[in-house]
Amino acid sequence: MIGKRFFRYFSHDIGIDLGTSSTLVYVKQKGITISEPSVVAINTRNDQIVAVGSDAKNMLGKSPRHIEIIRPLVSGVVSDFEVTEKMLKYFIDKVHQETFTLLPRPRIIIGIPLDITEVERKAVVDAAVSAGASEVFLVEEPMAAAIGSRLPIEESVASMVIDMGGGTTNIAVFSLLGAVTWKSIRLAGDELNKNIINYIREQFNLLVGEHTAEKLKIAIGSAIPQSEKLEMTVRGRDLLSGLPKELIINDMQIREAIMRSVRLIIDNVKTVIENTPPELIADIHQRGIILSGGGALLKGFDQLIAQETKIPVHVVDDPLTSVVRGTGILIEDEELLKNVIINETQPSV
Image: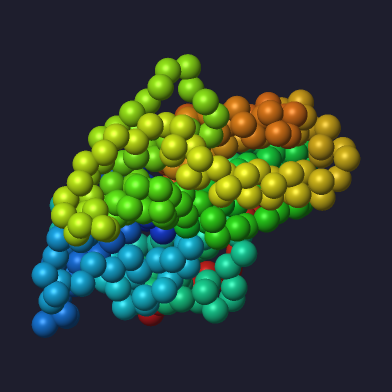
């Protein structure tokens, strides 16, 4: 115990938004210091890490056979334990590279999806402990997003949050430090990318990569028609000739590609609202719905939800960082942390 305290003295407590598409790290008294894609490149010949984050993502579709590009998280859940452990250790070491500690043992708060199982929770905790954490606390992502958005979750009023990340969309109504009604679906930003890839393949016989699909979604993707027409040139492989091909895609085509998934998300939002007690519905109608996560950046998504639910929708400031900002607040507020963690603390010796 004394040894653990000794190492913690030289370590920074950190909060992590461990997402399917990206990982953000908040360091106590420093703020958000890391924002990297949740991608790891491994050399299969010697089992060594070649690159992590942006450098690894840039290798997608370009690496030789012995370099394997791995996304260790699927739908916010650990799918590759060893690679997740290596990625977390890389981030922990990066946070402490300017300190004198040789063996950092930080306390870590990690955001996880709402519907995660006990086994999946344990995988997250074990990966973090193996990566060097002295203690691991788990908090639900929409709860962290609500805290990061400074919503009054401790009061007896409703706070409704839609947190749409890369792998999961979490929809929850909070009151008195707990989720009253909620739904978590494994359909989010990554699924929209797949929709775009499939649409371009089926409509134009053109094969494009995930990276290109994501660029299209960010640049010209929208949930409702925009005031001006948006276009973007894409390049890929013609499936008929096998040769390179270039074409222009517009915002209407991207909207058509992703609309089925967008509608499914909105249907789940309606289901949560229908299952919410009347007194809390009145609060939500007055206060509105909070939209966070990368999905909040999809043009017109907030307006479409508002049209369909007849409830005002507000996009939080800097929606990409709301979850990790929430973990940062919990690092500083021990009392609030005790009230919202969903696991027993996992000390390592």
